[in-house]
Length: 435
Image 1: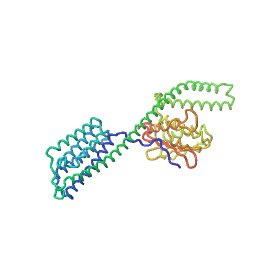
Image 2: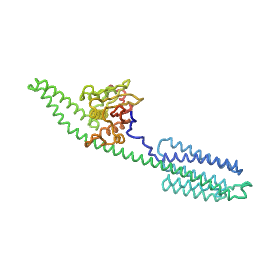
Image 3: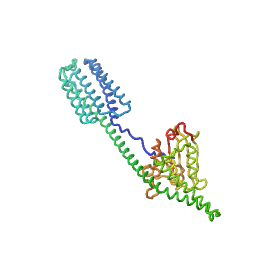
Image 4: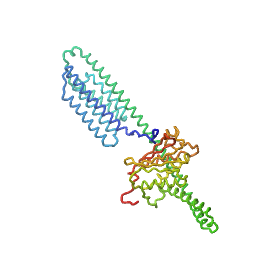
């Protein structure tokens, strides 16, 4: 069977603050590793004496900031601009402290302040960005006040400018690499944010569309209630009329008409209940097997004998509260399947962990590539009639409302397959209720 097409892909997280904090944590770990490597190379390999206590103390502070930042992320709520600004200001202070004890402005790594200013300009609000600029300028000014000079050994003391230029080259390469990696990551975050916003707008549009359809359906249901009740009374009167009571063939037709009217009234009641207008009626307690069995029975009643196949692989039954909207959309899918495959349709029920999986298959022409690509969008139909294509759209949204989802695929043997998966925890009946 071909690969199913899900109704939606997982949405990217729209919390930019959390992603930006995560990015700062990663950069800070890189800074810790780079500083430890620099101390090892300068002090251990080049033989330049360094004041290890203040330098390692600053590194310890960066590690502490990262641990606190990780705790902020684990809270599960959004990271604010103030929190991002505070961590970046700590980074500026740590860099200024390290430079103060390693030559001050004569240290070629003083250019790293520019990296922090750029990061602040990208991540923070305008006021906070200028606060980082002010902090960097204050740190540079403080470096002019009695910095701890580096005492260069003999090989480097004769050419301090050459050593400075080499350090400046290393600093330039470091800033360039980090900026490219950082900006690339930020661009990806922005694309994810735009995708999340687009998905939110699409969902809002779909929900607005559902509300408008619900109002239209509710109004139509109210309008249909009176004529259906009139038809029901008239059919009852005809069946009791002495002149018609002797005509067995006509009585069978009247029975069929009465059953059709009852079904229409049940559909109207379901629409009103789904719209929240049947508050006087208690929720219907049932089970998964009985719920699906009633749907299959309704479908079999209007189909050719043997045209509907029910495969029950669910296992031990589970009590649920019947959802009229869910029953209606499943019935719609079965009706659509019967239109293209009148001789055979199949509905299967199985269980996957805490999910019930319902599959509806037919032997028709299957879904087109366009239908597979645009599955779940309104007015995407192969029937070519105005207003078509709402069945799968309603299915997707009802399943999503219940915490589940839906997918479609084409069967290898020919025909279409619609798969619905729903959490039993949402369908389950309240404790103490009796089915």
